[in-house]
Length: 166
Length: 80
Length: 215
Image (tube, rainbow over all chains, first blue to last red; front, side, top):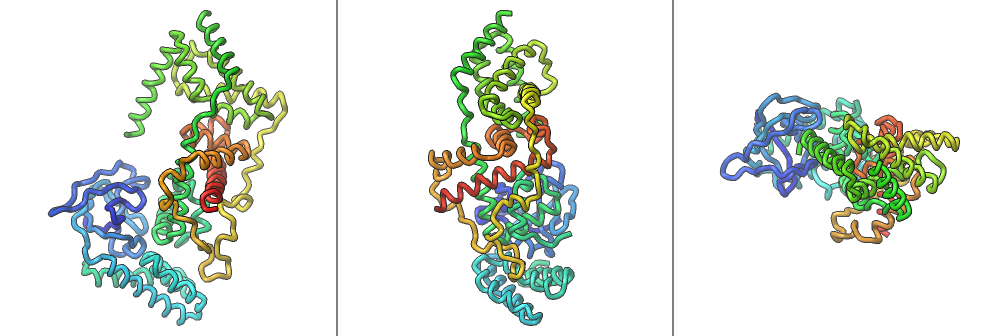
C-alpha cells in the first residue's frame, strides 16, 4: 500500500526521531518495526490524514504486512520511503498556511466568531499544521463535530489537488 | 471521543505519554497536538530534559558508619 | 536491544554477583550496597517518620538480606528481592511507630496542576486551554546548561523537598531506573497511582528548572 509520511527536515521521525533510510535514486531501505501495532509500528498517513500531521518534509511510503487503520493514521509492520514529495516545500507550506488562514477568517466572519480574528494572523509563523487546526476548530465551534471533520476533508482535498497526489 | 486536546490537557498527559500508558487514540490526539503546537513541543522537550537531569543525580553516598557496620556484618556472615 | 535480551543480561550479571557474594567478595557487597542505598532510603522514608529511623531501617534490611542470601533462589531479581525485604522491614518499623501511609495525597489533578492554570487561556477566550505564552525552547540553551552543578543542585533540592511518596517514586523511576512494576511492589501502590506520583514529582522539578534557567 502506498501512503504518506511527514518527517523532520533531517529525515528523522517527528516523535520517534528514528533516522529513516532516505530514497536516493531509488526507494530507501525497508524498515521493520517490532510487532504490536498499537504500541509501535510504522505510522503513515492516507491522503485524508495529511492535514492532521502536516510537517516539514513529505515522503511517499510503501507499506507491507498487515496494515491497521487507527483513526487518523495507518500502522504497518514494514515500510520504505519511495520518494520525496518535492512539491511539499517551504514555499508550498506557506501557501497552504495562507489558504487555511483565509478559510479561518471566512469561517469566523460567517459564524459571528470574530473573536478568533486575534488568533489567526499571529499563528501564521507556526505554520500549516496550526492553521489547519484553527480553521477546523472554528468550523467546529460554528457547526459542531461534523463541521470539524468536513473542514479537515476540504483541507485534504485541497492538498491532494495542489500536490498532484491521486 | 474528543476531537482534540488543549495545551492545558497535554501538560497533564505528558507522563502517561512517555510511559506509553495512553490509549492508541489518546496518544494520537496528543501527538497531533504536539505536531501543531510549538508551545507543547517545547514543553515535551523540557520534560525530557528534566528527566535526563534527574537521571544525572548520582546515588547518595552511603554514610561511612553504615558502610563499616554493614561490612562487619558481611564478614560475620561469611565466617558463619 | 530487545526487552528479553536486556533481562537475560541482567540475570547473568546478577548470577555472577551472587556467586561473588557467596564467595565472600567484600567489594561486590560494597558495590551492591552503594547501588541500592539511595532508593532504599527514599522508600524507607516513605514508611517511617524520620531520616534517622529510615537509615536504621536500611541497615536492618541489609542484615536481613545477608541472612537470606544463602536461601535466595533467584525466582525474582536480586534487586526486587532486596527491595521487598526493605519494604517489609520499613512497614514493620512504621507500624511500630504508628505512622500511617499517606495516600490521601492522591487527589484529583486540580489539587496539584502540572502548570499553573493562569498560564493558559481561559474559558471565554477564543482558544481556551492554549498557552498564553509559550514555554522556552531549551534546545537553544548552551549544551551543558542542564548538566552543570548549579542545575543539579536545583534538581536535588527540589527532590529533597517533595512529599515522601513523590520523592520515593521519582528516585526509583528516574534516578535508579526501576520499572513501574518494581515501584508498585515496593510502595504498595497501583500502576496508576505510581504514575500520578511520578507526574507530580516531575512537574515540580521541571517548574524549578524553568525558574532557574529562565530567570
